[in-house]
Image 1 (spheres, rainbow, N blue to C red):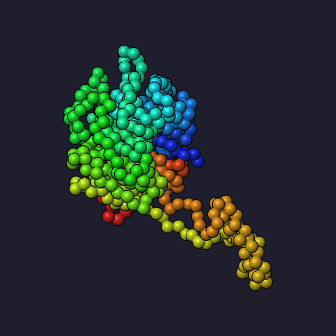
Image 2 (cartoon, rainbow, N blue to C red):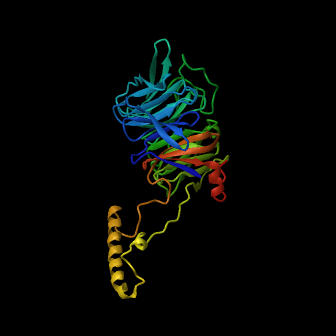
Image 3 (cartoon, rainbow, N blue to C red):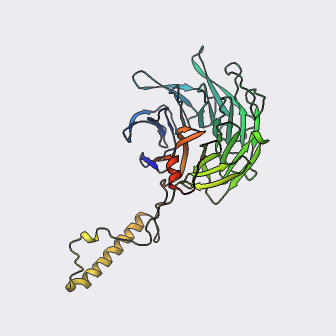
Length: 400
């Protein structure tokens, strides 16, 4: 049902895959980006990208051009290109920001990328061949706080952004001298760079952690720190649907079909939502079925192998029982102390991720027909989930 890969005890802040999924780039909450190559069923480290001076906040790997873009708290972005000998060459992108870069995303056509930042702006960067450098243009108004997440529309012109002013917005990223003018979309016809096409909030407030366009581009989903999942449909007069439950806030969200959404975050469990043609959003299922584990008792597993105990011997049974009782009690309190608990409880969760899920990505397929998706977590794990296996293992589940 799921493949689990561990990369140590440090949190996996962000991760991304190459086109054929044999390459993996991730950052372990540091200023470095680690590159891995798949060897059989294991991931072997190949390169370390070290140009950033502070923590790397986001990575994206372009599928067709094979270029990696990274951004970090040092206010810089780098575009990495593979040399003929397999090494990676960095190209510094001057973002012209005075706060940390928080998120980066390639456009679908891979000719541009957008960077969100704490400077309350979005930097859209494109390559000028005649000058041999990356040029950045800013989208500022009406953003009033840190931009935390970005996603591109399928036409590579419109982009969505979420920020800590509780808003999800859609802007035009059309660069007249660089882009081919797209057809009119359901979000509007005015394509001047930086034009605000939509601004939405669910009214209750909460930092927006993640945004995602649907495969058609007509729908936008975002998740916030108020434990909400929100979908707006531009093709239906911007009809807004919101779900709030007892679950903890989500950190990342993506479409897996035109009507299905996977969100994950502080509950350590990916959850499936559906948005039907009637404009109704529903929570369908938690995708990581909890495994029942024995609790409430403490056992000394090695008891049977201790030769000094012979409880079958009638002559020393009382003495051995007393010694065993003391031995078991001592190990019980040692276990409680090592887990920092005060009772018969365990710190191990019943989910495969043992801490917050930081990101969810499409692993196999596309947003319109995803067959596998991946999640990374603060527990140092990356898990690849098979959609068909999930449907078979969870009764009544259908992802469509």
